[in-house]
Length: 148
Image (cartoon, rainbow, N blue to C red; front, side, top):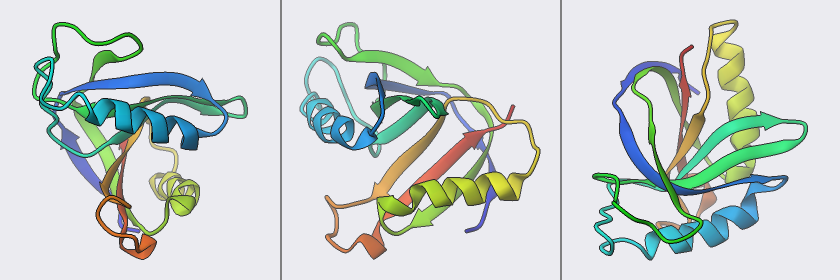
């Protein structure tokens, strides 16, 4: 996996944030709910679904399933919040393959960047996934780890 440095621009997002032990069920329900907002309530989705991780530790994940939007809407349904991904430098990489390989991909990224200072949240952008192809070997997930 090739690690690159990138400059991230500020990105408005809307999402559903929860503390969970297993992200899978949250992705399933939140993705459908967020995508259903497209075109309504002044919501224009501008990219792929995101997994935004505010905290990851032995107690689980404080995370949001989110989508990037053209602008933050004035109002959202209950349980959906808005925010931004902050601009700045970041390490990025593309993981190719099943989502089961994401923990190892993050470990590899952390190993390659060594002791560099990083910041939270970090996120995953699901560029190519099961909605595009049933073959998990074709899936692509962009990992983004902001610099500290």
